[in-house]
Image (cartoon, rainbow, N blue to C red; front, top):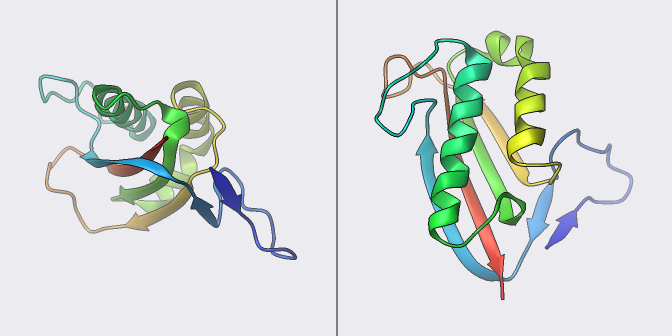
Length: 130
């Protein structure tokens, strides 16, 4: 995997401007913060993010992939301010579950998600090296 950071650009914090990789592609659908039985244990943004990240790792495992294989993530959040306020807790959960890898990431505020209690939904793309 090659992290793409154009010279002279400011260094992004916690993500990369781009990633180049070769291998088997694994696409993970949007994961929300519910458990394996489809139940939300919390309405807290950071708690839901933590669970969504755990769900991503569980799906990756089915393909033989690990968190360090993630090359792209898209985060859909229902409240930008809540997302920013939970930054420390979200960062801690990310480092614990995913690691300090620098995937290309996008975060977008949306009006609502399909699951009424969901505050965050995260898609991921991983590339398992050949």
